[in-house]
Length: 527
Image (tube, rainbow, N blue to C red):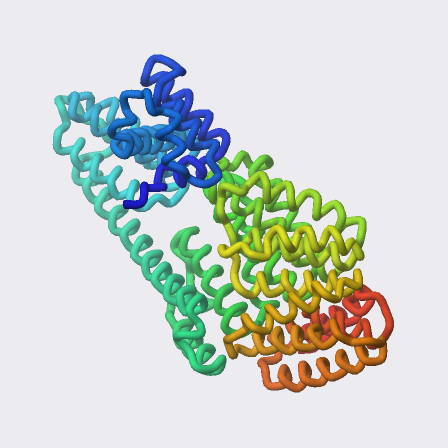
């Protein structure tokens, strides 16, 4: 049986502060800093890939080595307890849950006055962060205290008034909660359909018609009055997904994202209470701004995303750190269309440092976006050898999506072409053509490119190379003409299209890139 990697994954998911807290917690509970728990924790934390055989060799003389799986389970439980304790002070909802348990202890000890006093504070906090479950539980505690009384009356009104008040508030909270649950259901269905688009819909028209029916729900009407802030955020999130993913209306998606962000920024306390929600809304702004070519706004909000945790004292969790990585992924997407060498050079340095810093997060989607952006920027700046080195380092990363590995391979081929490494180019091209077995439109464009590069690698003159590039462009344009308009824009700003046109015109790659990006921008704004 393969040894479990659960503990390794858990340890590597922790932030530096969480790891530090765990060690303090373990030292306190065990009475010494040199416990076996800490030794095993540190040994696993140092392993990039889990290796139980190496651990058993290291700890062969320890008593726990004879039943190491059970000891790992013990450490796993201790880690979870420590992190739960750590997050009680940093997460409002975790803190409320803990305090509600404290209220129940006070009640069990017949200290109803203290329980009542603490319960009122908890409910105020729960109302502020819209923790509906906690509000309902707090109201139920009030009801129990009213029944128990314990020789004293603790409420500010007669019992019949208090009972009516509790019931009215409970019903109001349950109504709000029910609306939120209904909105969450719509959100989940819509987002699932977006993620599984190919298996759910035969055409874009079918998808748009389906989504339009979903959006007829009365809670999604522009005239709807939102009964809670949570419902308000869900309303704009659903509209953002609908407009951007099903209608390609990125201007309208941008509007919904900005409403969300401004609402948070107008009430900074909401950011402190829901830092993840704010960071998510900022990422929506950047994504939509990129599509409508508002690059300055997009860049501004990537920096806001990066600085928000420190500015608003948002607790650093793995989810929060993911948005730091995502800010670099989004900034890389912006810069690959701006062709600004100084900014690009600074970005590459910072982005690769961020990859190193957050490698334990295993956020492969953001990683591949950052890497392909860095590779593209190195190619644009004609730093071909550095481009090749980075390509070779990540080209076989199985965790990355096929389309990103394909882009890396394309840049690898082009960098070798620019350096005149025709034998290597020939090998890369032959291998790529053999591996492309799918018949999707984008894979066919990739196949056409590598067939062209294969012919170029054996060409004996500049004229022959130009002829092959011209033939490739004709096939490329013909094949792409039947695709949806938005996909056509993507393809016409792709690396192989820009490179081919640049060579035919005899101009630098980045100069042709600016031309194509400007044309795409005018097309989007014209639409």
